[in-house]
Image 1 (cartoon, rainbow, N blue to C red):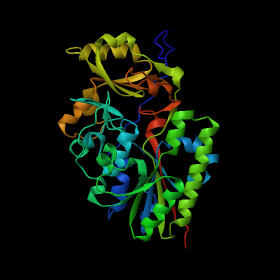
Image 2: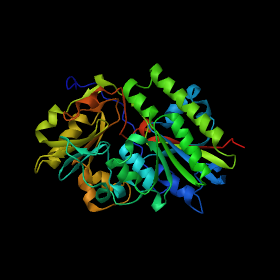
Image 3: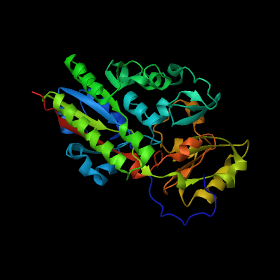
Image 4: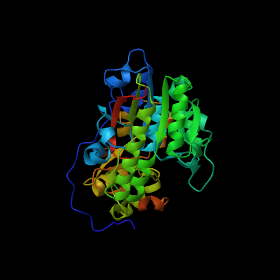
Length: 377
């Protein structure tokens, strides 16, 4: 259950990580690889390659390479650097940045759940709270993936035809996989067909982290399996090609016993959205400033507390996008720097996770951009 009292001792305040959307960040990877003048922050192995497989490992934070390098020997041995993901540091936003090359302000998929006039949309399920079907995906996010290039997109078969797939992968050549073995074979077939850039997505690390946490043997076993997947992909990619690894966000260990309620400010809240590490609060009429002040008093020792205008005008979501996107974020956002999550009674299942993401800490915001040459003859 969410805990409200007593408040914990103040946590040392940290500096939030702000993406440099014009430089090294996840949204620049595929446009950079497709460019005739690749940016200098791309790994040399990727720039030199005649063909590239971009493997997005959902949830692989940069800090995991230091914390769990023994379970990720191949990945840790690849060359590259840390780059930033988008804000918030979550799958719906991050994958949309990678595939469209747009900032969050531009593509407008501003989190796991965000507010629309019709209700709060769960982006991954493409359903409003209460179960109603979500809006037309191409209307909500009209920009096609990969700048209109029909790149092979190798993702889980169950995602075919979903609203979120339509919103962030529209125009790609969908190739479904059911198991890692099928993923590997789909990559091989795409390369045999002559594709210059292949997009592949694997979600094992994220799923196991949410369910078991970052210190559990289940998690380290998944890291080892993911490393084997990378070994297998390198073995089938020709030597004139390369494997590029990146991610949509990292993780922090925040379990069910670290979920904090919003009781002290509930009287000022009309509805909630976002997720536990980037909680979006919509104020009751004419209560916006009062809610912001109250949240800073109650949560300021554990969270970065932003107004909507501070986030958009400060560039946290990138250059200004369509003005209607601003309404997809609450009047106030709570982004914890402490190891806590902020509850939402509408999503009690979220409180049971063992590990989370969404906020602006290094662990959540920094992800790998790594590359290695293929090994097939």
